[in-house]
Length: 444
Image 1: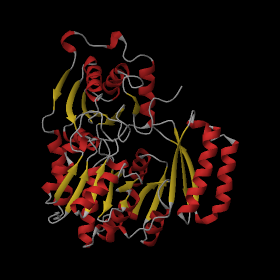
Image 2: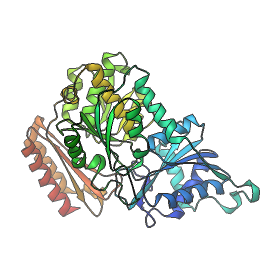
Image 3: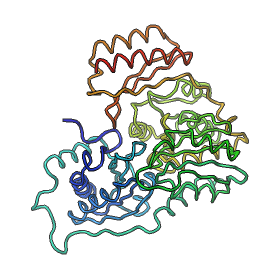
Image 4: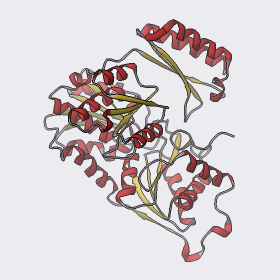
């Protein structure tokens, strides 16, 4: 049986894979394993109301209190569970996935994602049918649901303070912003304007079926067009729940999580704030990040893919900065999970401190050409033991030598195997990646 939890919570097509019954049991589990007061947020998906109701019902069936924050970014829930002294938090979102998907992410009372061991216990709880009848309260012992009126404002004020408290503002900065028909429409435009930026926003409205569709952090072309049309200094794009961010400079050149991490790591080091003189990334980071960190005398720790593993390494080592190429960045001084808004603000503040344009600041890292091919497969876990696939990988590695690398891994949230190749040239990376992907598609 497939594991219920992926790398970022429970996900599936809403009402078929991610059902109301499953959401109800996860709501019950939140109370059973965390405590009686649970904060719930959601993104803009049409199925969000349905799943929010089911999760809240599960919480109340256990005698718990469901605090309803409404449409709000994932990192806001991670922050507010601490600010509101909750026992845990739940976000109903499938992040960057298409609108028909949804997901349920659980946070503990400190705003951290749950460790694997607790997820295993919750999975067993769900598998046995949730709470037994004799465990449930009755009558006036059941719980209630209460709205949290100022949830977005509390988050915006916090995000703004991470820059404003350092004496930085964005007066004179022209920002193009794509909120991807997602939850950041409630927060990012206001935060940037409050810091003095001139902001042009697209995809700020939503109908529940347009989140992430040809927009946001995974589709940067609309943002590039907005940058060009408005003469913006920088473009910022979020995914559906705004736990990640991607940027472009004034010429439309992409600035991914690796570049953002390089700029911010150097900024923190120069200010004496880079704990342990170390940044954390994953095995998927570009070789250019490793070289930039080496040249700056900064140690780079690389983990398995997934922001949960980046965070584990950060907490274990006492480090303050970690991230992924996809734009998940964790600034542990400011939040306990990936935070797209805080990341954008910290990056812009670093550029301001250096007195450089976005493109000039990003030049601290030179990216190695990297090709990533997503291959849809029947069994994503079968790739490890397949002899033909391993032979194709070995052949590519032998040809690349020390000037590149190959990485295969199953997606944590989709029936996909990701084939990544880095090489000295884009043509070489592309050729090897597609050759391996062809074998994966045929064999797995």
